[in-house]
Image 1 (tube, rainbow, N blue to C red):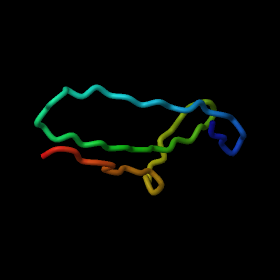
Image 2 (tube, one colour):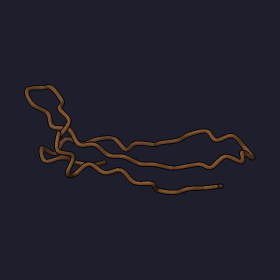
Image 3 (tube, one colour):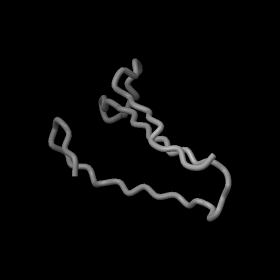
Image 4 (cartoon, rainbow, N blue to C red):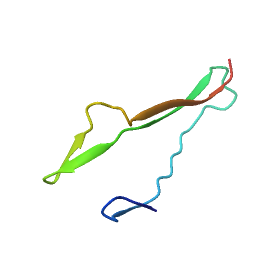
Length: 62
């Protein structure tokens, strides 16, 4: 569990996907994280994107 500045806990995420067996096509695994700010009960994306992340984690096949 993760806690934010206000000690609110968040449940862990489990990510899964299905891949066709014996496929000859390449597989790209990409992970992105975007941060939001809550203002008066509404969530807003942080506009400048300075702390948002996107990474190509792994490439399999060719």
